[in-house]
Length: 352
Image (cartoon, rainbow, N blue to C red; front, side, top):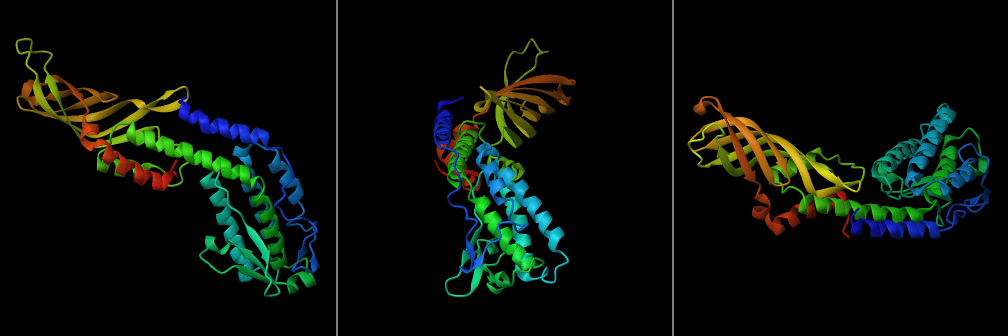
């Protein structure tokens, strides 16, 4: 493993080991009052598992934390719908928006990996209401959702709106568990991701603009972290030499235009980590020479070295051997690679 990968991981390990497992100090306490007047029922079905689930989250590996949260939220959402779908206020906009938001929130946790996000429930000092903030952004609503304090006064156990309030309080408490560690983890992951994409561009096989566009389209928008350890080539031109192994009377080399209609590159690993300095690849090959015309065949790559074979009709069905060195990285230059990297960094990683 390269040295620059060890440094952030070592720092992360030191911080995580030095941080004692302790109760979540930012979570909402069980004796908090709704609207400053009404007791919070710690045994409400949408809230009663909060402390147990917090303890579980405090004691699992950090890389599994968000997936465990996702599992808790999904079960709570299923329970909520099963419990309140027949309630008179189930169709209340506050209820339906919260359900839609929680579904998107769960998907967000699953797709982004260690990207910490929080769910907020705050009391309004100006009006007798509770506000659910940071929720509407998921469904295109900029104003916070509001729950009137009268809901907590009546405390109807069949009220879906009341259930939403407790569900939101539960999600808020769990979303803040080990938040500092999550933020550190996210920073390290972003650092490594940025490094991987940097290596993919600067060390790997230089990509023509249309190849980069194709590869970018094939990379998932919600990638799981690392840069790809593969690469496609497409309509890639090169110059090389053709040799006829059956013609011993003519040892001259023939210049050739070598075109790869399509091919695939696989980067090699070093100590279990993808090494973008070395790769192998295979591709289709179309060759054009001055003496032998057009030929069709296959080509293999190792790093920037190319070896191929094509069959030419003009040479009595002879196969010609092709040799070449891919020099596009020199044509692209460092400035070209910087522009390519900046585009990918904006999409997949953060700056160092």
